[in-house]
Amino acid sequence: MNCPSCSKKINPKAIRCPYCKALLVSKEKFSSVVKKRKEKSLEREKKEFIKSGRNTLLIVGGLNVIPLFIYLSHGDNLSAIIEGTIAGMFLGLGLLATRVPYAALLSGIILYILLTGLSAVADPESIINGLIIKIIVIYYLFKGMRAANKFKKKYKNIDILDAA
Ligand SMILES: [Zn+2]
Image (cartoon, rainbow, N blue to C red):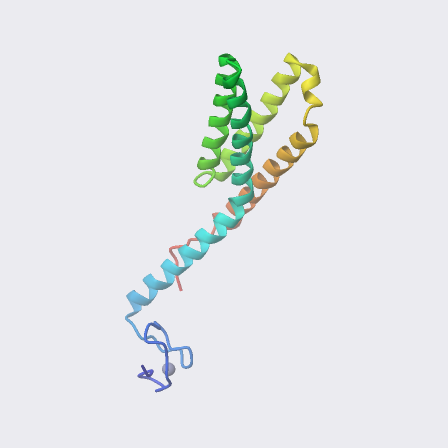
């Protein structure tokens, strides 16, 4: 296909000539395509922003699935229920993080610190157990929350519907 304006060879799917910048579709169509592309790239960027926090939530949830099965195999149903609830809450927050990243990560941090504190009260030695893992988890949860917050601030004032 050749551009009707400058006659140069162009991609038949092009909506604007890359050489002379002439529109090859109606103004409305051009606007709607540009809008869709902007929304898509914004969505991709958002996913990158929230990926680390969401993955941390899912990993914390996943880590609690392992003791769930150990307790179940020992017939310790109460501990299994507690572990199962914790695993479920973190996995749920991980899924929620795609839609409301900041709120999900903040809830995850509060929940994690609360649970660590509770188990430290119940068994003071537990705070030493896996201390490095706890620090790493909290670090990543905070990192995820900061990224989500940054994204929120960055795009708060941009009207993505206002395309080219
Ligand atoms: Zn052209």
